[in-house]
Amino acid sequence: RKYHSFTILDIDCLVTLKGILRYMAERIHVGALCLFCSKQFSDGTRCQQHMIDKSHCVMNLEDEEEYLDFYDFSKTYENHPLLI
Image 1 (cartoon, rainbow, N blue to C red):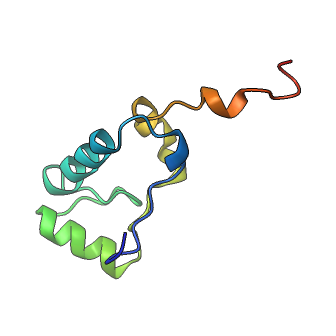
Image 2 (cartoon, rainbow, N blue to C red; image 1 turned 135 degrees about the vertical axis):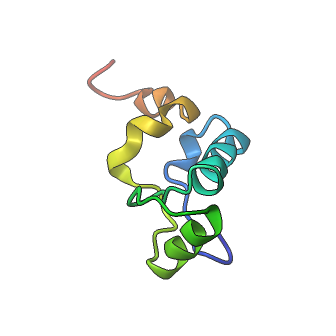
Image 3 (cartoon, rainbow, N blue to C red; image 1 turned 90 degrees about the horizontal axis):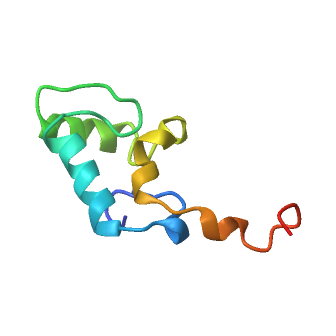
């Protein structure tokens, strides 16, 4: 976050920070896939440089299903007026 302005979305509902960081690292360095645009590169270093150069150091909201295993949104619905 400090060096690349990377943002993890909905961090207050995150179940496992270590798990999501591991998943993202594998996606970037093993799969060589940009987290934001899913463009594939020949290696993780080029992928990481692309993400920095294009300001793609953020999770893509359209890929939310990909990250659901790492979140628990149930507490956001507690005391919701429609559920009482």
